Image 1: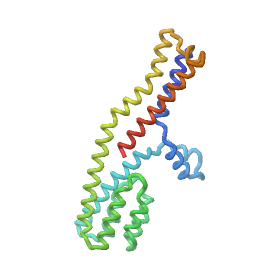
Image 2: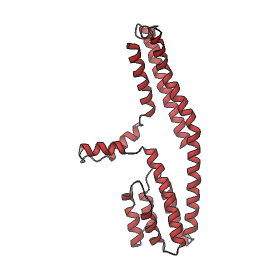
Image 3: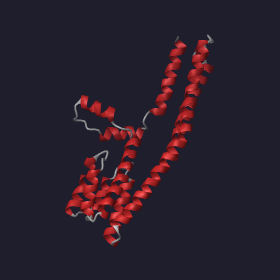
Image 4: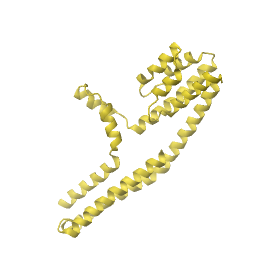
Length: 235
């Protein structure tokens, strides 16, 4: 019974090490959280908050739709400011409030390029930054904005397809790493089921404790290293 409990705890620790958020994400979430919200509302918002990767992906999809809508509005003969305003209001962005400076600049004739750059999120906002560069080129040189926006949309679609392909190729290594992380716990369960008493060795003396500590450390390092390589490849 004790062996099964230890094995279950080992499995839970392995899964937590794989799925837990990194330290930077945790600190960023703490810094950007609102401390004046009621506890129930904060808990509900925390439970429904998407992961940083999904949020970045949503921004990329919305930016592609924005470029397509902006190109259609420009082709219809509208001015750049009016076309951008109509395109933004027609697209469902993850956080529409961050785009208010862009709408204000487009309506009042302000610096749209700077507003696009400042409103772009750190993750998933590369499309808005490319659009800001296109807007700056169009204003400075006088190049056709519709053609530039079409190129940006095509580039973003190609990058999105590439990211999806890389994620599909990394699904196999990620699954293999999770299975290898759980194998030690499954071994303890099998040994306990066969009445071999593996915990007597692991906790009965210095050699067993050294083996247990080394195994857990290697398992955690393997998970961390695999996750790091997959994250770098996907980036």
